[in-house]
Length: 207
View 1 (cartoon, rainbow, N blue to C red):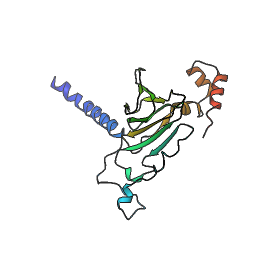
View 2 (cartoon, one colour):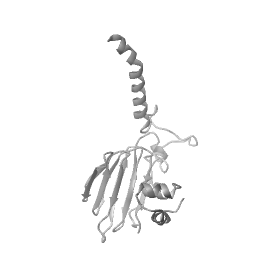
View 3 (cartoon, helix red, strand yellow):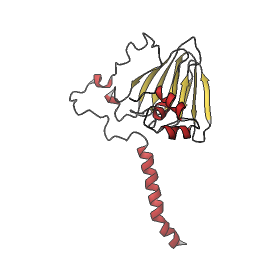
View 4 (tube, one colour):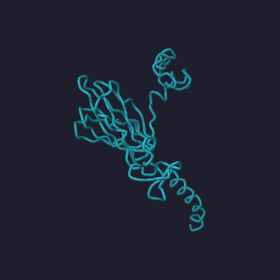
């Protein structure tokens, strides 16, 4: 019995290492300093930790669904801090199409209007809810989710917090129909014909 257990030890250790590596690599890495200073920056003061890119953002509402981000790309001081924000504008009847954030969960707070939200788990179960002003909803990391302003007469506004300085966004429609995936493969996958796939692709021009 002891010999059998001894033989299992290398496999148990390997399983532990692989599990630990997967856990560590799934989010932002820990840093060994209070904050990270970009290489081209030498003088640090309070301005470095201040982001002014949201000033005036509420003065005029856009006519299309719009996301204004404060991630590491826009706000370098977030590097290593595992947090970022976004302001989301939903004109009447607009939708934020199904998408995922591979590196972070999203916590959405509804500021104005009403919003239908939902996500699908790995068992293909849909969890959806209609939010009112002041409601919050969490989208688990990596799961496909959406938001829809079903009200065709009034805009909605939300603020989202992410557990990563660079959460990433993978749009399901764009990733599927805005890339070079073969038409025949998509036709078979979606149980339709190639002409239908081509019509859908026409609405998602390649970048």
